[in-house]
Length: 303
Image 1 (cartoon, one colour):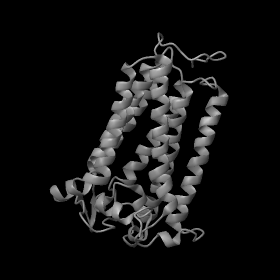
Image 2 (cartoon, rainbow, N blue to C red; image 1 turned 30 degrees about the horizontal axis):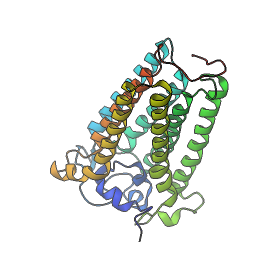
Image 3 (cartoon, helix red, strand yellow; image 1 turned 180 degrees about the vertical axis):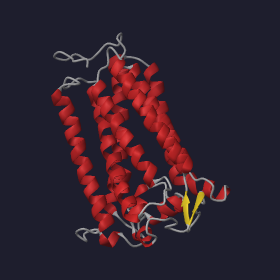
Image 4 (cartoon, one colour; image 1 turned 90 degrees about the vertical axis):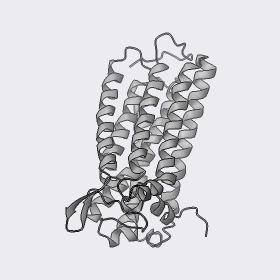
């Protein structure tokens, strides 16, 4: 059987005590445990015992997610104070999306002993927010070309409206998988959890959005602005994000085993993703300085 669409291996290897992948919380193994790990075998995070076979695990991920939320609010404020900032509102929408992801991450990757249904709801919102937020990031890559004046109601409506549609569609699929509303996705619930729709939406679609964003911004910086310096931020952000994914999908189980269940890769995935978001904000800030030449448009709007 093809690995495509299979989640059981991913969920086990990501540190199944509390998986670093929110999709893992939706399946039959998670339901059987009532929302309390472990779900998929392998290394179990011990965390802090709360009594009654309950633990608070992934405390580091929870704390870093909290720091990420505060950092994002600070970047929102900094964005508002920039005098000349093409795509200011669009970047702020991206940051708001990231804040929603981190709030969800506290309750999905974070090891709170939640009711199983509550954890599944947070997981579905988490998945939907990832897809929608990376779509917003990709759209930010197009904003610099000024095909539509940035910050206008049309620009914001197009970005927010399309992201909302992706959020609702992805969220519905995740919730229907988690709660069997229609029964359409029930065959994906038992192992090997071959959920093609969730695999495509959570694994493949965001990767396409990221690649398109990187290509759009690379062309803008090198061909339109004729500069090199901002590329250091763009490449740095891509590398930091990639390192976080390596911790999530490859190294997590080894960290968990090596620390006897003290931590797993979730902590480092959250940390490096935060670094990546901050670096991308600095990239955006560096290409919205007053002295950069801008592509011609019919009256750019600096908001």
